[in-house]
Length: 174
Image (cartoon, rainbow, N blue to C red; front, side, top):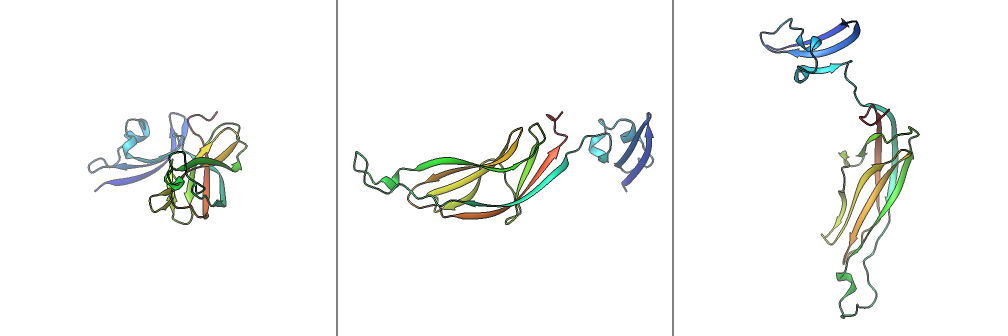
């Protein structure tokens, strides 16, 4: 039977806390302590690795606007304007993070319990009109970028609750 090990002490003069797994027949094996990069598949936690730390948590409510399709008159060829899509985007500032570099972040939809990925569809009206969003960041702020495509049917107003988790210790942090 595999053994989970919780170990705290010094390894080569460095204070270490490690939780790792020893497979059957390897009880007492300290290989993950001595060569953590080689045995990373057996390590659950080790203080020698840099982990993402949540430095800030922001909860907020975002309301997206009503967007109607083109509707007035006809075009030069006499076509119905609702057949031509209205498309565009909006960028909304969520929060200023004040870290001085571009941190990592995860946007969670508090209503659906989903992680918002890049270009995630949050509204689809009859496959005619679609609203999708993504999280973007720079060295100052976090933003939501909304892209929309409206044809025939309007995108109704939409309100969502979100939680933004902001991390440090990313590869690009100082």
